Image (cartoon, rainbow, N blue to C red; front, top):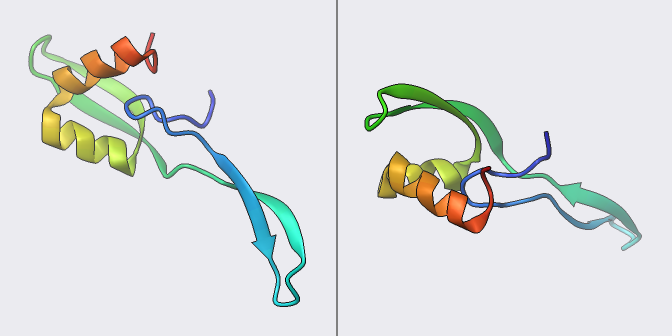
Length: 78
């Protein structure tokens, strides 16, 4: 599965390692992903999601059902 948050849609981004002599080499900044289970109160079942730390905060703030609905509308979840 790709390195993408299923709630916020965050993906890995590219950049440079910069040495002391200012030489630049390519690198990637990966997303802070966690595989986490959430209990959906509406359907009374567990949902396993691959979410970033920001995605966990979003679920805590808005609630699981609202966050899942918004993610489906934006196309992050099938």
